[in-house]
Amino acid sequence: MSKNGSQYLLDVLKARFDANMKRHKGFEWAKVQARLEANPEKLRSLGEMERTGGEPDVIGEDPATGDYVFCDCAAETPKGRRSLCYDRQALDERKEHKPEGSAVDLAAAIGVDLLTEEQYRALQELGEFDLKTSSWVKTPTEIRKRGGALFCDRRYDHVFTYHNGASSYYAVRGFRGRLKV
Image (cartoon, rainbow, N blue to C red; front, side, top):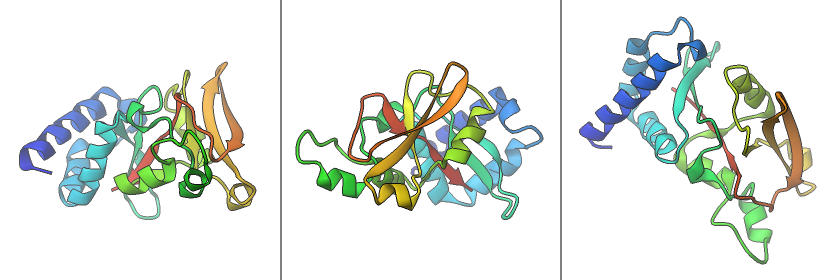
């Protein structure tokens, strides 16, 4: 990422940070920025989250490591990360009408993690997300071994977890990323 690109991204992230203090009460932008500047690979990942429509923001701190936790905070699942099946195995098993990729592969390429169901529910405590879309979440091995995968959304002021075949994909289903810096 160029110096100008890094500064532009930092400016965008700071503006979002300042506009959404309820997501990170007690945090100081100067400390977050210092951590980002010391970890250019993480800044690149945040740039990809931003480029694909995620609107990443600080949502907490990892108590074990002190890392800041960023998450996609766009109102709907990021537009640049929709119409994906769950993982590479699901993509490879699809015979017809294959999507362009998988959520797990794209998350790895960006350098982020898919949210777990618990993390997704915690995010929903900070706002209302996925009122019209849905997001794949990290699926337990025992479910994935049987061909399934989990996704979540928010409807009727409740957060729901559903299952689907891992090879399914929909125009309104994508994934939200999480990154520790």
